[in-house]
Length: 417
Ligand code: EPZ
Image (tube, rainbow, N blue to C red; front, side, top):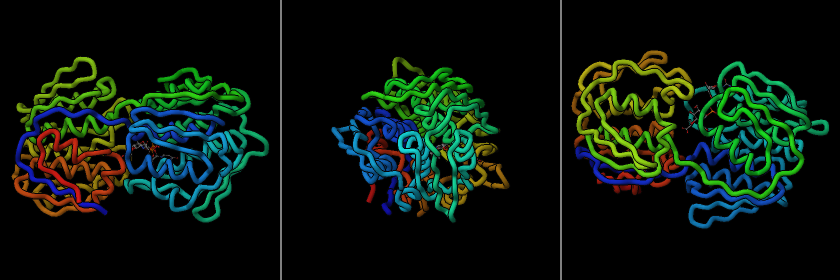
């Protein structure tokens, strides 16, 4: 796996455009399976997880091609329903194909999905959705097979907890089910809204978009569609917090400002300033100096769990004592161990991390353990004096299309090898 080398100790200055959203593009790619025709996703990020999903679609008989950042997917001749074990294990989003393959083929065979090791990450809620819609699900070891007697049937499903993926799979399964499906206590993450808008462009009938109550009336036929993948709110948050960690001044283009309110609120608490016109976010982080004493990760619109380790990196640069509580994933604090190698003073216990910020950070060799943790190490390295080498940087490339070029565009000294 590749390594990222960073020379820290200088403020970020400059302008960068935010890439398309990984977590919006992946379920949209799974949705393409539902249609016996072609869709085009513009502004699609060219990242490892998208390429993995593309490989799976092609293994099922889909045809795909790229034109710059436009990904065209034709599932007219899609015939498969079995997903290669290695592909399934390569990322979490392979599970999205269960809903769309059941909707299209009436069956799916897949190994348990992979993804960042940030907790157990069960898929029980996904499977309960399919069973409620009359699919039979069998598990043989880590292999799953789901099959419908004739088709999926609409029904009422109330999620016991907020789950992004289970909500998305419920939507995908309901689009071509017989009758109407009512999904209650849905997650509210923006990627779900974007998926619904894409499905509507394909001819799906969905009501209640943007609320916890979605009503989907099954349709028989969908149509060709094209869609602009929205910008990635977590990538935008990452670069904003990299500016905060280095007291820089940056301009971020194509920022989904409405989707990062909680990230901006914490940035303001630190003393960061920003203004926005259109999709351009101008951030002046030279005044960042106030410790944020307590932050807890929550479902949207709360502070996102995907920004938790990045925030930890920023707090290391601010004098004072801060606490971060990870409420979503039970094992998502392990980046603290790597941040300590840079001189960070962090104590973790259970779901809490206590940070004593303001001490010196010095470059060292560290290891990325997951996608967002790797990005957090880059943020800390930019604030550290000297050189940092981040091993297993391939984790970061799963979600950041060109983090080296992006950060270099902001004046960072960074290279991948
Ligand atoms: C999505 O993961 C995102 N991934 C994650 O981003 C993100 O952190 C997460 O949502 C929370 O916002 C993609 O969209 C590809 P969940 P997902 O189902 O769908 C439990 C990144 O870095 N749960 O909302 O897997 C689960 O264990 C990634 O881009 C069950 O118990 O998250 C967790 O505690 C990391 N049973 C909680 O729900 C289930 O069947 C929320 O998980 C499903 C989930």
